[in-house]
Amino acid sequence: MALKLYGAAMSTCTCRVLTCFHEKSLDFELVPVDLYAVENKQPPFLAKNPFGQIPVLEDDDITLFESRAITSYVAEKFKGTGYDLIRHENLKEAAMVKVWTEVESHRYNPAIVPIVFQFLVAPLQGNSPDQTIIDANLEKLAKVLDIYEARLSSTKYLAGDFYSLADLHHLPYTYYLMKTPAASVVNERPHVKAWWEDISSRPAFKKLTEGMNYVRK
Image 1 (cartoon, rainbow, N blue to C red):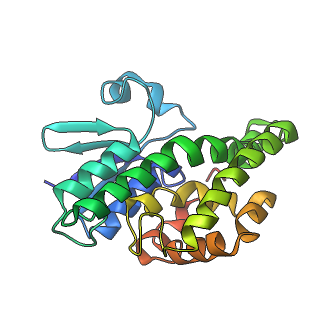
Image 2: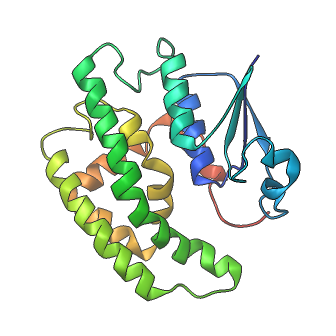
């Protein structure tokens, strides 16, 4: 039975999981969830994820939500298939992958999400971007990226000289950030910029970028 993922092509968290699928060369079915019709808040979907958020993975008798939990599950279950995203044969490298996936979740993501929301989502809701929110979070993101710049001056990727889940998890939100005036926060840091250009050019991610937009079709 193929993996079944409930989500939306434009969704950052859905794309995080789909990128993992492609890196692992897995067969899967994407079941579209209509966010504009608030399908994710209806009883059938809430039975899968009571928090009403996408994506949701169904794999035989297990149902999972939270995109990072899903990618970790997939990378572990299919560790012998496709690209090794968790360095499962090297304990120390695997530990570094876990460290930097935590950094993305707790340091990078909280700063970048409000910026992307204000630039790209707020206008769709009839609101103007709140520059105060953007500026405050750009300051936070800049401090995180200063640490990334130092890290990436000595390693090609965040966890080491190998691509991993730690890098993959950054892809969707950074992709949207780079379409905003805030892209300079990446471009002005040469090692961060080179890292971004590298990871965003991977075929597994490029397969998805055509569907990544906030324009309702």
